[in-house]
Image 1: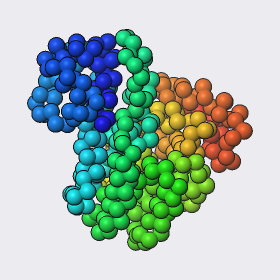
Image 2: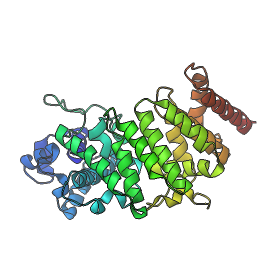
Image 3: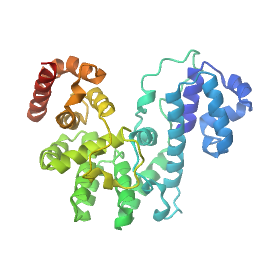
Image 4: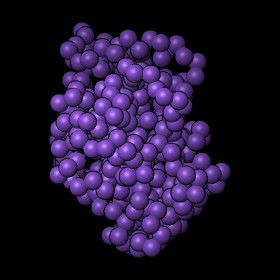
Length: 350
């Protein structure tokens, strides 16, 4: 699956053939080929031996970000294998053990949507020419893909207890990568039937449905979420910032439940990494553009120091704002919030 594909990308970036790398490790060329094709899953390699291989790749000059992507891909392969195990009970599904973050979810979704994780999107061409056609993403057989989404829907429907809420939410989120025509309506029906009695659960359900709808090109649900849920109260705005900061890895600790999102305590993160992420997402044709704009507006209102002159993300924002405001595709709210950001920049420079 994904780990073999990432391993091959690392080898190619090093300019090595399978035979070259086999000598370096040392293993047989057939072992290298088996890892890359998935015939011999990397996840079956003993942990100690995999650490030795990782250290050797570092010595050979592998980019650390690619090695981190390899670790996440191996973790994603384990989760995919668990999801495809029809005999495993819902309670044994590891997807409810912790709140997953972007670096893992992107690798997990890669075979499902064909979108490479962020560290792999702008890789230079490999030094050596490739031999023959190469797939553009890890390949998941059609039958496994169908089984995965069926399993996610079943998990979401069976995880009904309060203790299983995180598992249910994350299964719903992953089910949203299904391009079946009934996906958005199915998610909406799950939101309606949940009938939660606390605002955080309602907030998370509403966000999940809006995110899936936006991913499939339906902006109305996202607009409704921003207008009636986020802008409805300060706790909702704070929850949105906490969620984003954790999602992109700004916060320092892994969370075992969603409760941190609604924490009344000041969030232990600075915002620079989140700001960089949001500024990179300011393209009007992006499905999450309106949410990115609103979140950036709320972030700068909460942490105006992020607009300091030394901020690289702040400089990028200053450059992109005039172009964005010239766009005729902006919603009225996004235009108003971008104008507010421009005014905040002027105040910071005064």
